[in-house]
Image: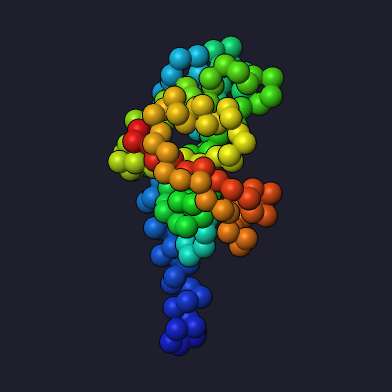
Length: 170
């Protein structure tokens, strides 16, 4: 058995961190619908504390026929990466299903669940992503600013150089 900080850091802190992360996840409502879609929880992803990334819920966006038309991630935590570049909610609609406002309906469906965590969240998008800008504006997201993506941020490594930031009160 080790003594002092080595033992605490190696054995106690990981157990404590796992308990904190487990408590962070609430069970989302079993039914989250809006318009022609519903959200289906696929999994939750724990992230080790102390970095830029935060735990998140991963949902499939399903249409009325049961087709998976995209996904939505809801991030739980506030780090510079989330507040500046990633936003609390990220979504993607698959190419064959775009143009049906599915991203809007997915955000609308998760709105009551987001309210159980936050009074407002940050939504972001690249300046050239006109579809996301329209979705965020339709949700009544309030424009904050446009920032340069820091070179150390994971979004920069994926090719994003600028982000538009909005505040959304779900």
